[in-house]
Length: 577
Image (cartoon, rainbow, N blue to C red; front, side, top):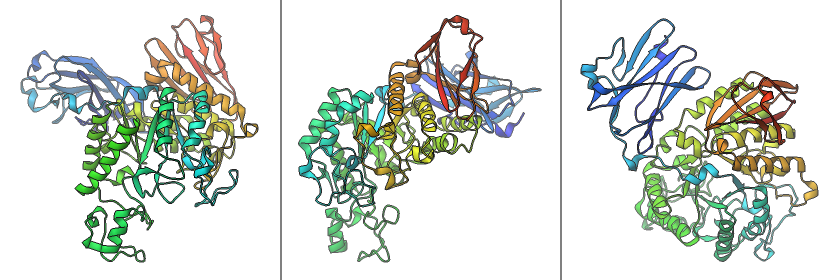
């Protein structure tokens, strides 16, 4: 038995509270190294009445197997250890290490413990996120609904974008296109920043309490939120608290007065007077016009939190996406979460963390993050085809084991965004690859998010190419792709197995197979990302019917031994009941 590979950490994503009386416990072992695992657990003050439960292998990656069991407890003050059976030996894994036999009479010196489930510590994501289907809009490029507030230096709507191009998209434009979004089936909109800023992207904020004049005004925004809510659509705003614009009034005063300004500690300044060459104050990246904010300063924190309270209370928005969230101190985010949840308990908080975000996802800061590691896997598997289905599956297993189940349920899963190349561009314009990736995205655990225009076949390289104006000429749309997206969204919103089901993988080198299960229902997402047709045999033997959800075709129980043809570059959603 490979003891070096066995790992468990209490009070982490290996052992966490899922509810007031529910605990999830995981154990990692070397791949294909263990034949059985029992979790031995009991109330730590009454150990001699301990119980045993078999753990189930739930996921596998390149090196490891992962086991999990979910406990329903009347008393959450438990101790526990693992009894691991290998091919030739059995061993106990305890907090004190590996033992041949567990000493019950000295249990408190040896067992792992979960001291108590405190209600305040439970990471509870908003219940509605399980139903959510998001759509990201780069506001300046969606639709120009009011030419009266457009910039004078507009470029033609269908022209190739440049870094500083203005097209005239605004909030009225999104308001006027709510029917399109409702028809598509989305029920959540994530907007790039809307606050006053000199740029087209608005990630350099001048005034956090004002709508940018080119986007409209507060009256239009209020009407937009109200009508979106009437249509069952949630609205998420982009909060840029890591940095601001060089025209942010407090920064201008510091630039003028130096340490004589009461705002000098609002920024991360290395020396005075301020200089761009050489740069002597911290910024976003090395962009001199985006000075970094010192979020540990009490006065700045109050200003930003007043901003949060204002937009949530006055306009009833439904949550925040947090720009460059991993460069801001954890104390700030803990206070931010307390404030947001105090105002609106079911508001969602989504960070922009591109890498392992576990320190932010322990229940005291974010609900989830933008799932760029999954984006990377999708690019490698679907778009570039540099990995096989089994490798893709293993990569997903590693990512799912980073976080708790409630975090995975709330992750914002995306194929592309304003910060990446368009997925269709990465696919060399092969829309079948995009369709396969979308079939995966809408079947995967978490919130599927579509970047504006992906559903009609918009393409483009990395910024600014990925920020073209939405093409509203329907004759230019890829209608087959649009209809496919509508169907995926409809399936996602109606099938409980996709919204709230467990997840497992059953791939081989030729076919990616993902199973979502809810009670007696199972949906097998079978994706052939190769140029040759393949056959798939359903493993289930006890069911009364099969339906292929994308085509609507149904089969009777005579299909038990039937092999399903999966054409090249295509996907099936096989539902068994």
